[in-house]
Image 1 (cartoon, rainbow, N blue to C red):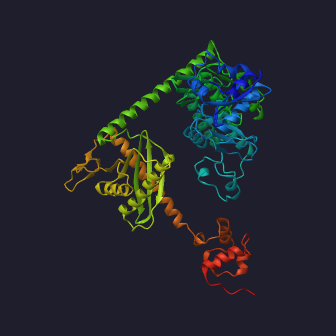
Image 2: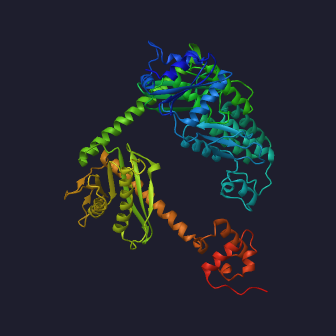
Image 3: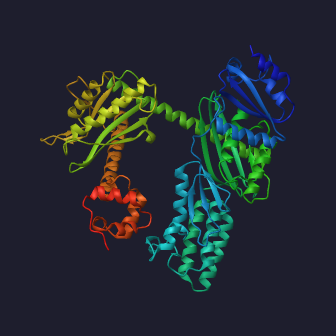
Length: 628
């Protein structure tokens, strides 16, 4: 039964384009959508015998408490408004196809005298050229590395470019022309920038022709070193082009979106076609998707193409089906292209036959293949976790495993690290390091007890507060044997955590007789350890956690040691900030000079006032004689 207020609003809805917002009885947003006709679209949710089979429709009818509509002048305005409202409010039933991070893009500041290639997450309308977005940081950095290897653009920052007095290593290995110190031919550097932009745009055929022509001319002019540079670049371009598949004879830039779905699990595959060649393919997964296929497609287009500055939007986007308000979305994407300096509109097409339909079928096949691969991977990890559960006699599947390790250097810079595996994969957002304090130098047991006590205490507090941030894992592993296991059990027992599953993982070693003892697991209340055969799935999971903990602990120890070695006595003075410390050292030369400097000399340093002077005198003690 709908609330009376909603019933009244349904009767007076306009037949205009706009956005509609469904709210629950507490005023929270449930769902935001756009419509070509608000009257027809919104009333379809609540009509008896409606054909809408979305799983969330019954829930929506039960939970709705109010309805709001915003009328817009055009479908394009509705699409823009929907995008901003969803990003700002994050309604419960709207699908989200990626995390909160922006996609990575590559940026070339063409207005700079010596452009360089940068990785950025938020493109801006600053006149620069942007390429991407890349579906993963690995793909973006691999492309960046390839460009830096074969095209001689600078990699230093603008500040380094101005201050450098001699060429860096990049010049020595012939990966930079060193415009920072050498008189570089502007036209030659411009050719490198032009080649990089063609390469990133996927215009490999055009770039190949230009490089062949430049190589031939350089050879005729007896500039053999320059010809060799063009030859190496040509080989890199040819190698990249050989990995691409020719799928069309048209020279239009197209993105092709394929979709595969089973229940509430959706897999999308995006093929980027440039000048008739597939230059990139990416897949995107989403679970618990309750909205219909057309809104999944609309959500992807909205999220993916609003993430950049408009230069990555192609001439045409091939879709598996036609979403609501597609003409307005196409007009909006065309405006984004115009803002980026591309004076051509973007078409959203649902091909029914011909070459474009074959492209769409290819994308859909990629989506299906990616879905099955990920499902097989999920089944494999479930099987591995089940074997580990059985081996260690755990009450449940160890979906989340944590491992602790201690690292120090001769008893100094002691750091404890705790890493997390979720479904067998490292969950780096949950990695934590603990700086160990008040522990006897080199006492690994005391250090581990301190770290685990702090971690378990936070886990207990999180359980009381129903917080997921410090939630305790399904299995906690310590790197070591009986001694380390006893320390972990004591730390947990002191806090009343008697049900936490804890195990010790001892490394492979040899005994005094030369016999090889394999990796083994120590469990509470069990005298003999459980040996783990090499290459077993149980050992793979636990060894992954142990190796990650060891690596992360060493990393934390190195950072702590570097911070200690590079620390200054000025760092410990309250009221003297980093900029003031830098100004004092730059103006007076050293801590010793600051210690014996007069008040007038200290106050003569730019940015230093009497409050800073008082803090310095309170720290150093004796005040030197004042200069006349």
